[in-house]
Image (cartoon, rainbow, N blue to C red; front, side):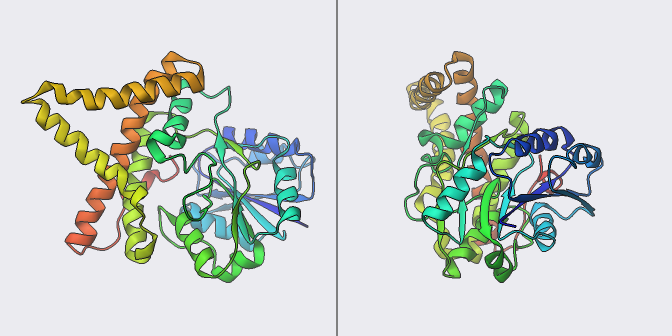
Length: 329
């Protein structure tokens, strides 16, 4: 068997249903699917049962340990030459697996990943969050499928890796957040080849509300410092920009108490986001939501980064994360 899809899931049976349905529509069929329930209180076993006759699908239920260890659980029971790791809130276009297969035949890779997109059916909030996570004005476009400044680090919502490489590296670490970047760093350190597959994209639902989005990006900022302590060379200028932005917002607000014109700096950024998102999404409403999402994305990540820097780099504390009970949300 050539491919094994590994899908960790926590309390998301409806999303698993959509993802499995999209797998039945793939134009290639040389694959198995492993759905691993991570101690859910709302299991998806009945959903998986619906697809027994359409897919080579296997269902497992284990105690809660987080997505990284749950992926490892699935990988240990897989049979494919390549492991394709997806988040449960993804939906695949029919040509996804064919695009992966074509890229591997054209130029082999030990590990790879693809970008994500917003589906037309996604809510305005999800589309705004997708914009904030992929726009050049917020992340430099590094999450939107553009080639990165130095190396491409696949993320676990859409990641592929040769099974023998996965096992040689010991799979994902026990980090609660940032475990996918940690794994990608170890891929490069092991001397393996990693590539971006631009056509192997997925529809990724993102968070369903802005509060959950803040928790996600805040922990991403914390994880970046935890990764820096483990791999100092991994910290790049682009990772510091949200922290710089956050400090800048605070300074602008303070200066505005004396000189209100300073707020024009924030207004200019908001206008740029509004115009760009409105054009991309063909919606003024999504443009407005994107302004809010962009500020949350940058300041959420920035505050997480700064708090972790203060606690770990200045005060010498150990690794930590916030909202630990919500790493699936």
